[in-house]
Length: 186
Ligand code: HEC
Image (cartoon, rainbow, N blue to C red; front, side):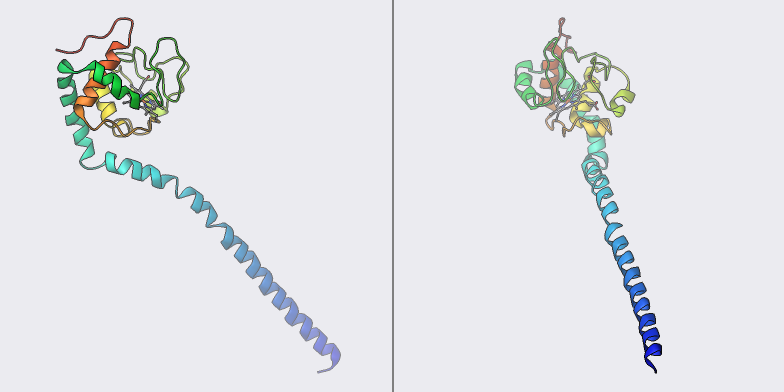
């Protein structure tokens, strides 16, 4: 092999190497980047699924229905004073005074028998807007037992009240928050 031949071969080998290294770098860069996207996409559905799974499936759904009837039955002897204490759990997100603007959640003044998603100026979720109907005692009982079970897609991040009597008490308290308090069912 003369020098010229050697140089040519070396050049060929070098360019081949460059190509390989270049290609590998390109592949590495791609490999390095592609997992990042699913990495961002994946965690989003995951918490949503876990958040829905315990409530959306299995025992929780029928329990919500049975629970709400029980709650409505309990309203006759509900204790609005105790409900006021329980309402502290709601106050992180809700005001319930006439004329105040909404905070994290809509103002709950006069919520009993109010059409759903109707507090002026509050930006409700689509799920809440689509639900329709008024906040009757029964609807409130369904919703407060398991907000995400009853209205999947609601942006009320609250697991619900486990105790039917606490729930009845808080609904009885909500019924007092109006110019004309709503009479409880007898
Ligand atoms: C972590 C914040 C948070 C807590 C705690 C919370 N809520 Fe809510 N609530 C919201 C949000 C946000 C919405 C709006 C939901 C939507 O648009 O999907 C809402 C909506 C509601 C609605 C529907 C009102 C309307 O105008 O249609 C009622 C009723 C309600 N909440 C009652 C309660 C009660 C009672 C409690 C306490 C037992 C409570 N919430 C606790 C955030 C909260």
